[in-house]
Length: 387
Image (cartoon, rainbow, N blue to C red; front, side):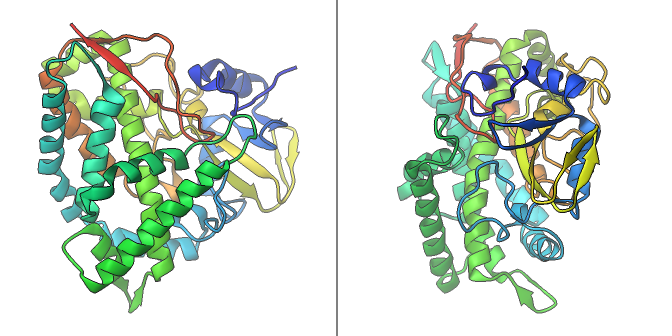
């Protein structure tokens, strides 16, 4: 009997065979382990992402949600509340924010590359990707650097799930509360001392006389720190892994860095770090011979949809010339990632500099430790050897 258990630590080592079985044989599958329906085909996932009246985010979008978060953030709310939040947050995340990260991103990756220059083996995740991500977030929010390590450590814990209990453990919840308290102190401090930074923009953003509430700013900042550190760092780690595993693609990018944006899109399709998110069914819904009842939860497997043969020819081939259309690496519909352009620009700059310095490398460990998360998939450690 087929089982689908996203909490199994062995699953994320290679989830794609299970995804294929789901797409081909069980496109609407009830997972006893996850206690929710699982959708795995591209068209079904895209339909769910665009049909928020049936597939609601208001009870949370994380597979294992934090208390008090559902309904209060951009990713865990439906229109019209979602539209209000998105408009205000989007008005704060102007093109100026993009312009402000170009030079800091180059400076950050250059500094951290210098730190590993004399090492024959370095860990891309912890020596480079994670450090650059933290640098950029602290720059955008003008956060004091004295707690950088604590912020990173708690953000990493927040995305994790206990594989045995199949839920957030005390340490994960404690990390969430620590981050919420940290964000609250930042908000109050910045209200007293506004500056030229993204957090100040959140506080002052206004449309038709309406502003974000303090609680909304706090939860937005909490979520963006968590998602920023995990999503951007995780994606950079996956991109580096792809380039280690596919040396011909890497050498093509070294020879022609103008292709890096195309390679980023293919990596977001081929190996997205954002693998699975949740919705709640609002009305009884028939799909592929199954009936999902109102109140049931459903898991949208972005990582499977991105490998769907019905959408992409040869989906298990990593092809940086593919230019995949409408991949699910940044979600879709009303909940498409608001930071997508920021992530693309940062990743492009980082890998332009990285590939200048490190043209030839291979991964040391064939078996990788993966972040224990029901939502995300990225390596905890990625040791690369030069040459």
